[in-house]
Image 1: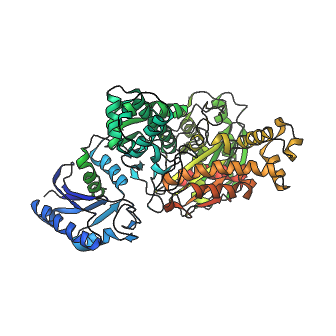
Image 2: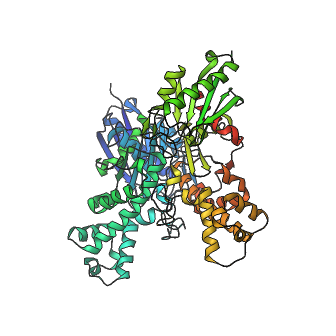
Image 3: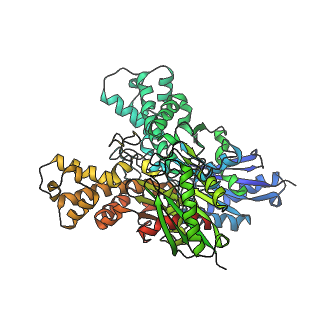
Length: 316
Length: 316
């Protein structure tokens, strides 16, 4: 009989989970609130109940190989979530052990970006690749790095925080970390919005974006303006791509991946962001790396990707 | 009977080689000119002859497990040296195969910095470590990265060119690559000298370094001045450490190593360079990485290290 895996993606607001088969079909899925559970114990109770409902539909726990969990600041070595600023639970939470004790199933836990990388390797654009880097461009910038066919966790489980690498020394302040000039300050949805506001304030050039209050501006509005031919909006993506391309060049000279796989909201800007990114990637690479590395956009359905990624941990 | 390995370190000027035992003793060693061999074939002939002399001293080829070779632009996957600018031979040289055909012994080849990392893992400061980064600070800046206990080669064998990562966008021009602001432009012996010249020209502050013609200035002279309390010379190392520390922070956020091991001429500047490097490393790390990573200086004898590193490839 076929066996299945469970993927659980824990976010600050909600948690999604589903049953996944060997080829990446999400057979059944559901979701619940993370935020309303001030206590992790009640969260685990509800998660267990809802998971059992799905598991029963595929024939019971005997058919389940295990549960993969992606969570912010999740640590594969310890199974703990450690000081995750966006979750309701403080300090160090032994989440893998708690889920394992409750469900009696094997549990693996890592951070969401690492899980996404494993998902791409098992089901997505990185199938068959031994060396690639996954970059998630969403509210923040996450990353998972695969080398020699293995996820790089580092000595403490926290490797792959590429969003926090410094690309512009003394650059834009990141309010969450207190550091200046990190990739995430520029190449996230928030970063794109800040870039637009900066460019708008620096000149009087006409732009559709001037019709929007700064507090209402977001990456989607900037993308829509670019689509309508707005030059200033295009410049926002050009600048974002310049910073992202520079950062990617440094990552390539680190681990020389076959491909960089981009995922997340900002990739919807398509060539507005991809073209300058590719251009500045190549411009910053030394010769032996030029025209080798593929920039791919994940083709996993965004609604499924987080569940798929977490579930794939159990096939590793 | 114990077996031994041979280490060969090919440089632009000379080639060093030796017989190494299991615990890192260089039993016999010798060297020859690289530069005088315009043809790689005559180089291989001479190398084979000289190696056989050493091999005979330990009981003949039957005692030799194989030959590890470190060479600029050496590729572990192909066994080729590819377009090495500092060697007398142009294009792609199938060096591992040529040595293997001549000596009838197994041969592994990689670049010199990767070999140095393997040497540290087998015989040096990285013994027992699964995750570390080796940085060589010499005429240039080389690097070898170990994660999950394995050297990261990347999909094409060229991973770990950290000296070419861009740390100062639009910064100092690297004459060899045509890129601006790379780590090597600042944290190499050449970079330190350029920094001194820049600082000397920017002000009229007194300094022992003003007694030296710019064309005669080098890292050793700057170090000697710093030792004598010269403030400007100390500032040169402060600035170098600032750039190096920033770069190391990015590397840590990539692969989260247990340690960074520094090797090469610039490490002789000791705390003049190590103190600012550590300080700026920590200042650029996000909290989860702070006060975790060790900065170690290699304790392998510089005269033996290259041979040891190359030889260690055969124990891998």
